[in-house]
Image (cartoon, rainbow over all chains, first blue to last red; front, side, top):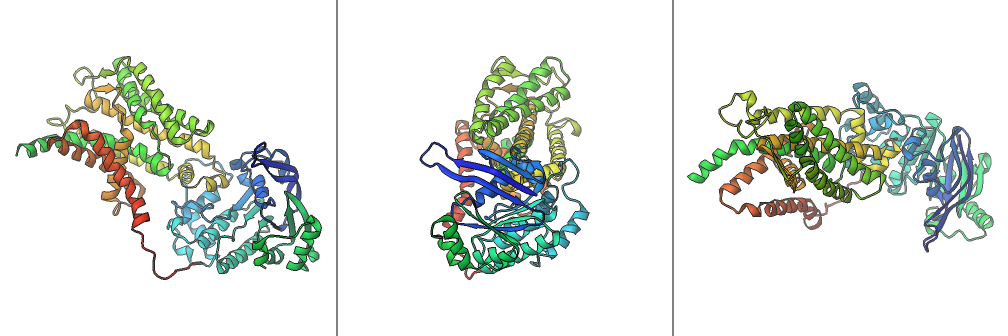
Length: 265
Length: 308
């Protein structure tokens, strides 16, 4: 499904702010994989997701999605393969537009946008049905501006938008990090439900080790711009937070020094 | 009494002129409100529209065709700003200033001199300040410009409801989200600037006919007048006009109110040299109000209200 081969990316090369963000990153995702990604700050988790979605181009290496080489493809063109939910709830939706208009935009991802109506009556009904599954009462507020919704509500709508048109790959970039614990748990459950029901392939970055163990069928740990640890199946189910921390020290030769990750166990 | 009579006498002209500037403000609305860009190109493209319309009409081209050419010329100016901004990475405001400055030369070259007359006595014009009184309704300047406003709003209402129009609005609202949904935001920004400046050039073409000449100075400060119209329209009609078409209508009405106030101020005998200063000050204060509200007058709500 997704193949990342020998990706390198250095930010601000030749300056004092030089930062090697991705260092020979390799990762292959199989159809239907739900992979959780953990790692310390600056390990390259979000950078990897940005490389996949084309926010910038890598210095070298190759990325293919479902057999299509997307390495040089601009961000808006590869959007047709991807569903994306960002860390910042403000980023995933257009605040000045209504819930249903946002969803109509998402439904047309990858299609040519012509001069037909931007939203049809049939779609409005479809969106109401989809919103009901969120169980947030949003189905009665379809014409409300998204800017009026809370962060959690916006994140739930973004999640719905990312999967309204089934993506080849769903990218969740710490999408619950900005939410309060209760809302975060709800959005996570929803993510799992949507991934399972639609048999999606997904990459979920998280700072929460417990969540990383609980969700998905595979877990990867990143350090200094590449994958240092990759487990799936039974082995993943038996993981513990303590075990993960230990594995980090053996694999990287360093202490796992990330307060956020440790505190959230 | 004489002041009141002169105000009343000046009123129809102010309405017609205000509506023409209202069209300009509708063009500005597209960049300022929908694309979230302050596009200074308009100060130049308004005159470009006027110059192209006047020169082509003098050269013998039928007026409707000359006006279409004026709109196309305006769209080209927007295209240039769009390329400066998206392809060359110049900040939008600076891109607009660069185009505006170059348009000063371009407009002079189009006209050959700083001022070109287009007399209604020699040409069959659509609108003129001569056509305010004692003319049949369909020839009345207010009626003709109002018809332009209505048709323009109808077209824009349709356009921004289409799939493509929605993607333009999304571009202005959230670039990240737009790209994630497969929208080419650079292309859309260029198209939005073209559309906006095409409309501004149309208002320039109408204004040149109305006043009977095109002048290289005529667009100076257009963005401030346009912003004033948008702000006034929103302040007066914002509470009752929620629909997009009505919001655009409010902008046109804002232009009318601006010109009526302008006429009253002139009739009251205030030095016309000071008018641009006054306009700028009024717009500055109104632009500051949302910021002031947020910074100095916001009271934290009692008790948290947390929604999932």
